[in-house]
Amino acid sequence: MAYNKINWEAGEVATEGYVIVDGQTYQTVQPEYSGDTPINPTNLNHMDDGIKAANDFADENTPTVLNTNNITSTGTLSASIAGFKRLKIYGTNLDGASVYAEVYNGNSSSASTTLVSSAVAGGDNYMYSGTITISGTDVTLSRLASTRIRNNNTSVVADNANAIVVTRIEGYLM
Image (tube, one colour):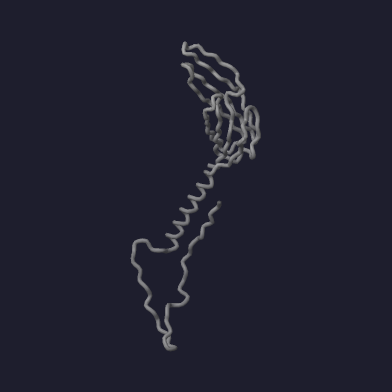
């Protein structure tokens, strides 16, 4: 939500303080202040600038959720990535473990990254990978593979359509 600054300005005395007693007008003695931080337009505007900067930072770092549908091969985002400087891509691997990547997009209309995750089972190491490519609102998840490295140092690489599933994509303005 946008914050609108007030732009504090000093006022001028329109009428000096006075009291009326029995129809007579008497000047009053003006108060005297002490303290190290006067309330004046300079200090109030400094505070207002800080509030606006904090609000703008929060607005720019609030994610816009572009997708929450599972993507196993292709998908469509709710908006183009062209307006976002950063993308966060979440997924799961074949074993259900979370995988995450952050892409610094710089307002480009296309981005690509590889999601990689691993697991250990029965003395074997498993690595799952998938390349995600985004162009505008189109998402493609390809080159999906699972690699099993056996405890005897031999490996088996297999194309596996479920190696990685993209579960969420977020866009950030900053």
